[in-house]
Length: 163
View 1: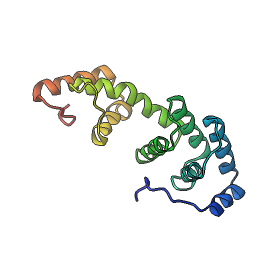
View 2 (view 1 turned 180 degrees about the vertical axis):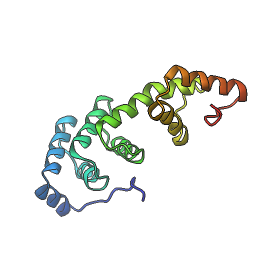
View 3 (view 1 turned 180 degrees about the horizontal axis):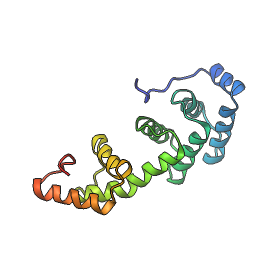
View 4 (view 1 turned 30 degrees about the horizontal axis):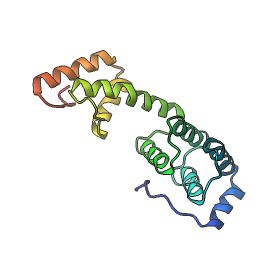
């Protein structure tokens, strides 16, 4: 099921969500505080979509908003994309999101450089290899980088399977 398409709620449905769910009220207040502005109808749809459509727990939804704001992103399209990416990656809490960001920000870049790709991000399959090596198998980053460099030297191409 495509989780990138969020439902659009009517104003009455939005009011109903707020009346019956304290998490919704808390998330709306938190969003206003983080964004330092009143939330719009579109914002409400997005925020309720995190809880209702993606099944995000309130603390994780708050972490998402804080994470995006800290990185200078308060546009709801960016926040939605981040939420859907985390959902698709199976990330269900702040700890997993922090680990994913650490991998993305440092490990992914180092490993892609080993393959001669200075500014590329790994695709889903490649990221799966990296997660398996670094998290499941707990291979050190220097060992992974070394294997990737040798794979690149021997094949002349980006080959995660060879590494």
